[in-house]
Image (cartoon, rainbow, N blue to C red):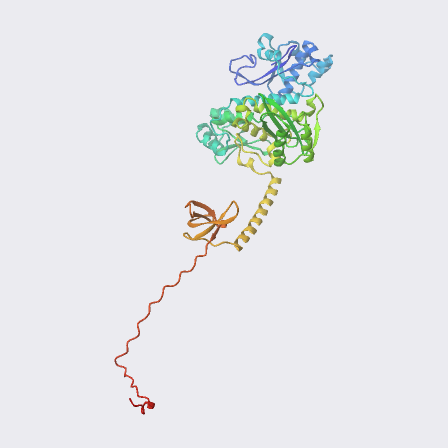
Length: 554
């Protein structure tokens, strides 16, 4: 449903959830059609002078372009307009029959879509009419249509994240999905059906809860109690139980921010930097043009050059200094202090054109993505320390980029990050090229560990028994000025020591203890043995008088 006015363009995309006839669509029933996407923008100076038929055709072409991710390949697309001439013009009229060159170009832009055109009086085209009269986006539609796609996707993501409640676990893994599936009877029926493979010949013969899977039954399998679905090029996804689908769907919406123009002008070792304001607080957006990795930081109390430099040092230490940084030429980014900072780091600065920030489109896209993630989710005083901001940024980094089927996380770290969307463990495996490098790193660390172990065994210290006196090293000045008694020997060569004087217990490693040499105690004196008594049976010796005493006279 589209509409054009002198103020702007508006459109509404509705999806059918009922089985009513297409004759009465989209007003067949109150809950049969639900909102999928909507948008609006102001007219340019040239578009304000369009004739009504040209403006209405422009609204149709712009709507199809903005919602192409929803509409391309849709076999049952119905285009509703409140301008009756478009029914014939966009219906079966050939291009050769259109004389107006502007209408010719607009119809040519719609040829890649398959749709039928229906007329709806303007008095019933409420939503599109309101959006066209009160548009929101003001960028030029020709040069920056892709940035507007980012804003629309970002707005949906921000609104979805803001509506979430975070009372449960933020990250969902296989264990969480498995527990939820075990409590879901319909899911268990699906598991049994896939394992048995006894599908009925016709879809109508299946149980109602299994009919949704009938058309893809050949792509379903069971892995560790969970049903998996294999789609294009062998990619595998989990089939989510009904109880988790709302949370998973909300988490998925959080990642769709800026997919269209994220990698088009990417250059190796080139980054973009921009400072933006949101709700009176200053923030710094830093994005890598090659991988699409986005960093957001709060700059409290103003975005001064010194604060920006402090944050950039952290990014440079984490990701390396880039060769080139693109900025919008703000005074805090081109000051003498910042110029010297970039010069010291060997980084060249590319400035966008004066008063034309669109020339630094990548930075503008990064700022828009950051704003959409932060709006309504930041904490007190603009703090980024909240689960909502972290989850939205994580989903952004895990969303595959356009045309390469790789996310910023995969390009920057070699693997998907664990987030709020459950996935099979296969998706968390390291990329093959990264894996070879990591395996070589593991082997190198194993060799280093072996060398350290051999060195430790060569100069190992003896164990200390409890009760031994030791000297304790003072960690402040590395002197052995304390002494104590080992009270207990613990694991990992740790000892509990009772220090002399204070009696305080201190836990120390063997490296910081030195056993005191205790003097050997003197052996006790041996008792003196009494002299042996003479044997009574031994003959006594006779002592003879010496001869020289014979002449002695008393």
